[in-house]
Image 1 (cartoon, rainbow, N blue to C red):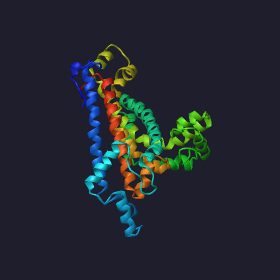
Image 2: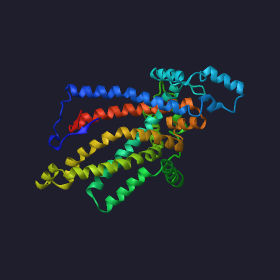
Image 3: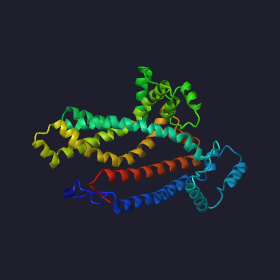
Image 4: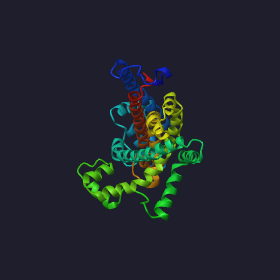
Length: 358
């Protein structure tokens, strides 16, 4: 856990990045991923078993009792719960998350097929968050306690307090129905999707595949379809970034070194953009890991609202089908991604901020 050092040590690293302290910290943080994942797997596994075995939950009432009992025995769900747990956790560490009950597909295949779409959506949402949150956060700090600041703060609160599905409906109604500017759903037009599927070894990230295709029209089509989903999901994080940048810039503008620069005649614009801007971005790096979790959870509603076929869309489908094996695997994979992302963010925070201790 990184903690700020005393004010007198600001600007001076306590331990050189090349020293053993940094590598020890990285090793400890890396090793902590494993117990974190085990705890998450354990919690999800037993929560999924609260209502009984997955086959009964998914197919109960649709199969005769004899056929249902045969399916349960074949899948091994009639064995002691502890044995099932140990086998499942062993499979997770081998990369085996089981097989879906509704369409008999390996959960790993689901994750690989649809995970790239969710990754692409999260990327667009982060761009929206940075483009909106950081500049408007700076503006709110510069206009502190004035009318623009008040409007921006209200806007930020509305951005992260409004349900994503409502934002999605509103954006679709305005820009797709009333104005007819943007497509209402999907990741690309049918023509573009057929072109992307013709590629050898498609990545599943439509933007990358469209660039590989070498078609400006395909790239434009993919980006055009990404505007509304990226905006709906990105506004949530943009509101958080705006408030965070505003608070930290105001705090930095009151620091002694900024006061000294102001007394030497440095203009307010330069103070804001050169002296206060970069230190205010450091807290954003530290919360990106948490925001990845927010984006992945918000992707479920965003993807279902815009028929963006990613992990969130499939998770909603499998929940509706009561396919707990698929739900369990997807939730665990999302948790693993969040744990790894937080590890990476913690390392970046240590490297870019000399005011931290490890």
